[in-house]
Image (tube, rainbow, N blue to C red; front, side):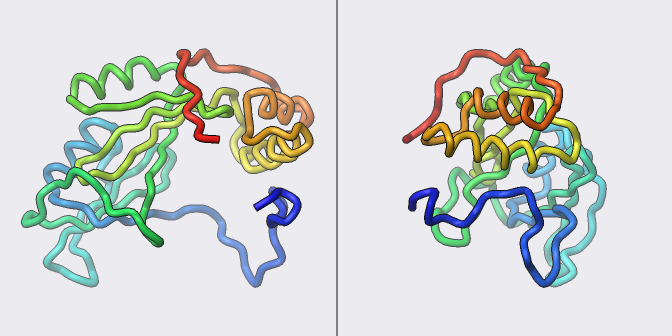
Length: 204
């Protein structure tokens, strides 16, 4: 699909019957409680803020974790379900979950994953850096750090501007220069984080 025939990319609200106000929570079919808490609370550092029965199936437990900004990730777990090594792909399946991390903790995060026996890959994704690993369910987990400081509430606007600059540039994907240019165009400070060198990690 060419950019010319695709739906427009913009941070403006679409003409829709209503608009969401943010992500409240995402719920995943999990394995068991112990393994889920070990990964998300004890390794990723997400507080377990609520535990109650799955109200649709009280034989299962519903765990609520704070991902770091008050947005919630929840799991339906049951002690009779072992952890898994992989996920099935297909329409409607979850490809991966991505959580933000502090750029200055990048090295410590990689060391913590190694100590926990978790394999991982690190990629420079053009406008951000990503560490990829797997949770106890075999679900791909991305830990992402922005290359540039982006003010709260402005990320959509910055990305949409970077998209326009990418199209004007004829580039296949958004790159560092497009993000820098977007910040400059919007009159925002250009503060680049010190992140480690990494492979490009692109398939285009």
